[in-house]
Amino acid sequence: MDKELKDIINKAKEVRLNVEDKAQVRDNLVTFMNKEVESVRNEELVRHSNWHPKIWFSFARVPAMAVLSVFLVTGVSFAAEGSLPGDTLYPVKVNFNEEFQSLIAFSPESKAKFEIKRAERRLEEVERLALHNKLEAHWKDDLEVRLEEQIERASKHVAMLEEKGQLRKAALINDRLEVVLSVHDQILTDLDTKKIATKKIKERVKKVAARRKALEKKLLTAKMIDKLPEEKKTLVKKKVTPKAIKVIKDVKAPKVNKQNLKQREYNKAYIKLQQAKRATDKRILLKKANQRLKSFRLKTKPTKLKDSVSR
Image 1 (cartoon, rainbow, N blue to C red):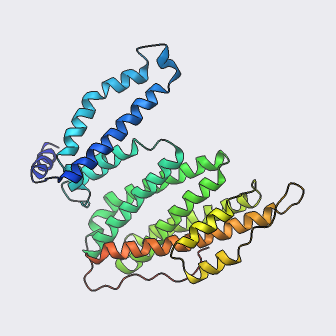
Image 2 (cartoon, rainbow, N blue to C red; image 1 turned 90 degrees about the horizontal axis):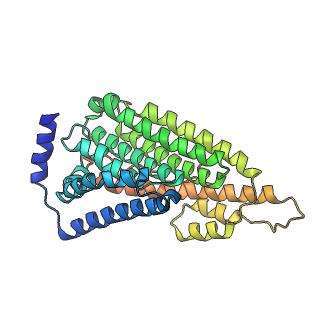
Image 3 (cartoon, rainbow, N blue to C red; image 1 turned 90 degrees about the vertical axis):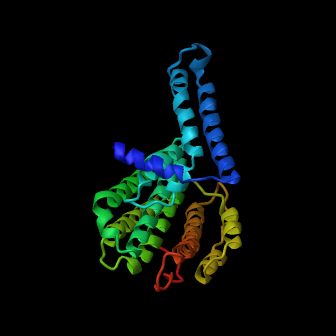
């Protein structure tokens, strides 16, 4: 442990932040601290006791926050962002940077989105390691466990939203998880020639797709969703696939009133729009992933996405 700490400190001495990076660090820290203060103020018991547990906890964290700010400004956290399993700064990336970011995710929705982001980061690491034939050394003992944990956390938050009856939010978050997993699954089909990670990821894609279908069944009979025009307008602004464009044009929201039973048809139209959105998001994410991997690739060709509306 002492050796690891010394390695990190030595690495930190080599890092220098520019003015913009320092400003960003300060802004992130101030945002976090403001949210913490606000959460304390909102407690009803604060008005009745100067020693409310939450206040005491906040005061107890002041030294830790001071250490945190010093640690961040040294630039270690920025340097760690590009690290991979096996690198000196990787523990800082996963145990410090990401845990710090998780503190400002409060609602089940924001927590789920953050866990999906973490899972995406693990998948990006898998791809980079596969490019350099180093995946086998780090998959079983590290990456597989972390990836499973983060996907599971995101799935639990989706389940919480579903239990609360927030079906639309649950479906949207689950869709994002499906998009992330399926796009990276396609990329790894090309990169992971030894099939070290692809089997596990394909299993997860199937599970998330199954949950999406279950949510869609519930959405069919849910309370009428009245955001079709807004959804169509948002999608039209994006670079969508030809088949997705056709879906958008074909979707017609029936005129619904309290006397008729066209709610199911309306919800069907919403589900079709979500199909188009998934196809569009996959295309956008794959383009970004290929651009990111471009600098790491040797002579491999970019992964191509079939022009189809995902089901």
